[in-house]
Image (cartoon, rainbow, N blue to C red; front, side, top):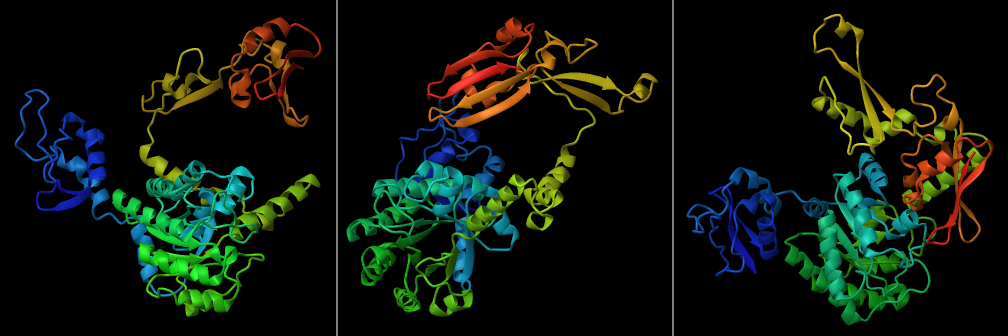
Length: 500
């Protein structure tokens, strides 16, 4: 049900879904009034109630129109990522979209000049979990990774929604989650659970009826969210069943409301042509799996001539990243650093990541003096000592800059507290933290100065309840090494702390 909601600008209005309207009521700016949300009549909202007099007000629904103008834009004329993607679909030519797997790879796609990109479940599973794309990665992990990606770029991103992570109701939740994460489009497939990469063995698909129902559920979720997210309907039935079955399912997906059709792992150029003849008014997506997939690799011009609109390159970025890291590790193990031509300079890395833009924007908020506050007394990571330039002592302007010396909050009982020999006592000692997995393999072996206790629990959370200062009190005067702790945590890993 839609409700006509009066805009903050009296000369205009917009139509919001019930869920959108309720989200406006939950906005912090609306908390100055209480609303009888349960008393909707004929699609209209009740007047707000004055919380002091309990009488209905006679003015417009929102009393702070300027504050609500951005919300009007969100529900109205804002140029959404999905709208930008639809403009690409309506433009001539076949449009290339590399598949990214994190914020950095997406940023590189945008910097290279591509109009949009995909997320690859294959690549995200590899980069985030170090595991194959065989159904290990979850909906929550994909949404979280997707949000990091969409926030890193301004180009539209099409998210890999796998098989929707369950039945039709799960598909609806997935679509709504991807909308909130900022995706412009979502790819939904008809594989069973656990699903698998489209060009690998052992794929199975659900029935025709269930496959079509997933797309209908996705379309319903889009309507309920008031979104225009692009729904890409994918079928894996070409390899699981037959070409004829995949063509039938594509027609059915188009009839169910899909915006783009995609048959994965077509085996020849002829099959690709047959696919593009199905539902000719609905755009088609091609998957150019690099390095030896089942589908022939064609140029963008060839794909355009066949009838494709979107072209995905799923493995290029993750593939070259793997090889580059392997080569770099080989060089490091051999006592060398990677050659200059194999990696960007430090200045280039900073530019890519946005350091220079950050520095420029930071200048807008620069002040002549800075003051740092401890989060809590006695446990702050840093203590502050303010030292003025001696020119101030000579009576110069109080506008002169203040130099702040930041010293770590350390364990000071044995040296480093102003004594003449700051490396005496405990400061001449080292804490060695070693963790051995229950499988016998070493997981961690690090050394830190014994005086620096702050942050050790960030390295080994299991040490959070241990009074390391008391252990150091007992062991500080002893000569030679000493085992301070030796225990197994709840995971069965052996944790050892040595004072060296």
